Image 1 (tube, rainbow, N blue to C red):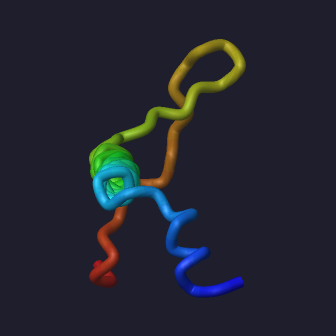
Image 2 (cartoon, rainbow, N blue to C red; image 1 turned 180 degrees about the vertical axis):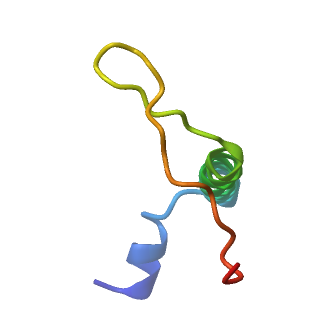
Length: 67
């Protein structure tokens, strides 16, 4: 198969550009969702409940600086 024959099977430049930009948008959107989820989970302050719905006493929170 010649190079000319292979080039005719490729979609035109507008379709390639659309697919490239669309996949880029999907990738950036997905990474944005991951970042937002990470930020939200870092800000949460979970309260663990027992089987009766009462809060369970937990160890005091500590920072990671060794204090």
